[in-house]
Length: 121
Figure 1 (tube, one colour):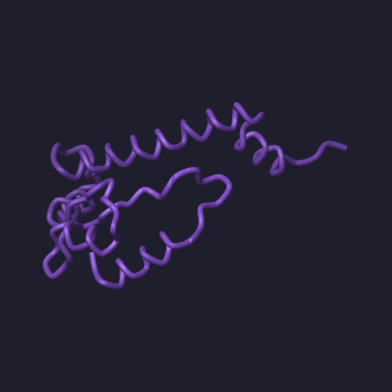
Figure 2 (cartoon, one colour):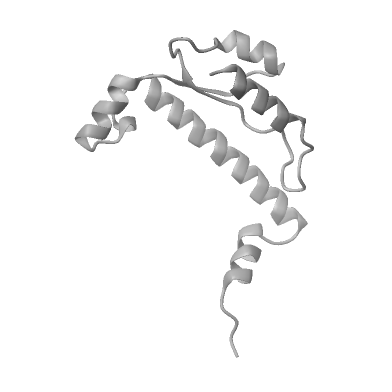
């Protein structure tokens, strides 16, 4: 977490929501606890919003996982829980959007894939 990251996030948060974005973006604080990085409180104060997901900085464990070819989420701990929380948050948002689209009429994915499908002659 750095000042440049906070500045970029503020710019993104200032953009208006698009038609397919009914809520504010999910705020993910990656590599929390990195030496020289900003604290969670500093970031939340600067953004004026709460951080939704915090992924801790765990260079030793992640490097070991990469070297051994094992997924880092296979190990119990804070990193695994953060990734699970992130997946739930993204999945929940996607499920809400699908419900809203069903009420409006049709699936956005179905429409997208229909456009990508080759036309029959």
